[in-house]
Every structure is written in structure tokens, then in C-alpha cells.
Length: 110
Image 1 (cartoon, rainbow, N blue to C red):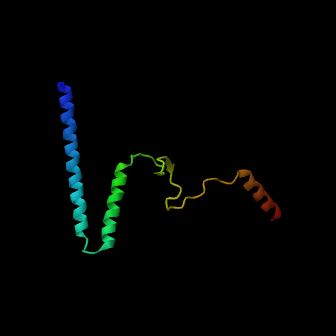
Image 2: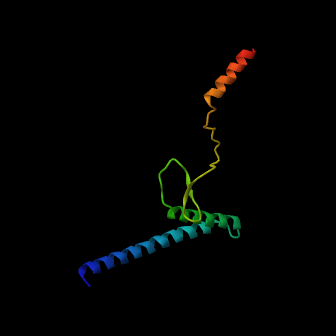
Image 3: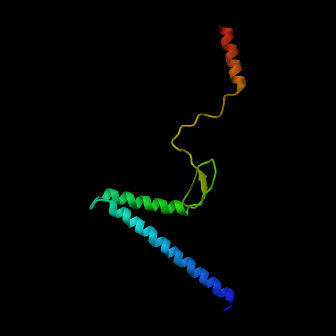
């Protein structure tokens, strides 16, 4: 093995050990949150577990900076969010000819 190979192997080993330390740290924080729940409080336990799974999923998702909210389907395709809980006004105005002819007809009747 050359010196470069040895250096790369040591760096990879150091990276793996660092990942292990981070994993143990996150696991300890998770168990601390679980222990904060009262004994037998299933709702609290489920909420803590659900929050942890959500955080792990968000960490795995790529971060895209866009004004359009997107989700990822089961096949990994990005698609825009159809409903975000806030009503949006219609953006297609009526054709101006229709309004003008209606206004002209109203004025002629009156």
C-alpha cells in the first residue's frame, strides 16, 4: 500500500467513527425524549417516535430552494403541492370583450 492509500483509509476510518459518535449522540437524545414521557403514556411515546421519524426523513430529503412547494412521490419524482391549506384566488380573468359587450347591453337596456 502506498502512503496515499494509507491516508485515504485512515480518513475513511475517522469519518466512520465520527458518524458512529453522531449516531450515538442522536440516539441518546431520542431516548432522553422518550424518558421524559410518563410511564405508560402511549400517546407521548408515539408522538416522540413519529417526530423522530419525520426528522430523519426530512434530513434525507434534498433541500431545494424554490417558491413552489414540492413533494416527492413513491417513485422519487418531484411534483408540486396541489393544496397547501391556503385558498388561492382565481388568476384567469374573464375576456375583456365579454365584459365590454355585457356592459354595453346593460347600458342600452337602461
